[in-house]
Length: 193
Image (cartoon, rainbow, N blue to C red; front, side):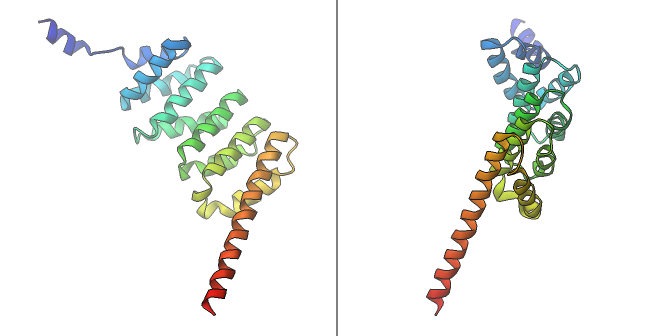
């Protein structure tokens, strides 16, 4: 009888309770994070709904981080949609910057348009995080290459020092890549003669 009761009630806390635990910090939050990642699809709805309640800044950053990690475990479109909404609309720059960073870690080309928009954010830290994320996605720019390069050139004159430095780093990588390609083309041309 006790086995049937255990099976019918589940083996662990419900995702809704785990989302609440994210705000507690420390080991409790870390454990909740791990349990939510294991819950996969069952965790998406409570996480997205929790964002609608506008919890504390730290909790929104934690929720965004869990959602970002869930992108690798589930194909639920609400995950990326929630992250994009946070990136564009969250009132706190630290949340928007954290989301930009997380999107860069996921390396999904579908994030490029939103990250490009985030490079125009009013907060320098968000612009910098969006640039760093775009740099992580540099191999996936494809159709967006011209737009990204133009935006990076523009941001190399940004008033925010961190954004300016990141733009210069990206520009130097672009120049290096072009020089390497030119050298390779020269060598290939010399060998073909």
